[in-house]
Image (tube, rainbow, N blue to C red; front, side, top):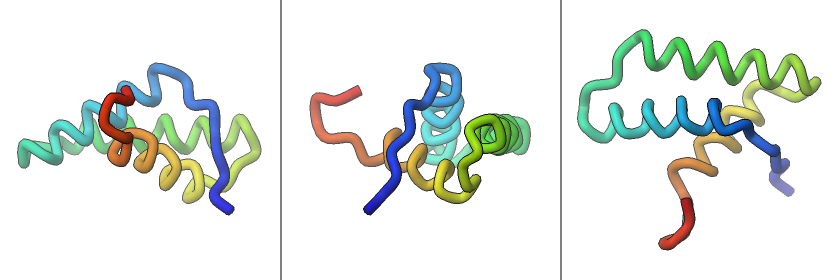
Length: 69
């Protein structure tokens, strides 16, 4: 069963910005690093596996159902 997290708005916004850059073919190192730093911090503060946090965050941002935001 996949773990769920209550992501803060700033972390969701960072991942959305990265996803938009990826889709446009212009992901920057700065954006990617900001997301990784935030994911690592969130995982460490909550005692979570960083990989699980990253995968759940990507799913939350990239795989929303139509009409969800």
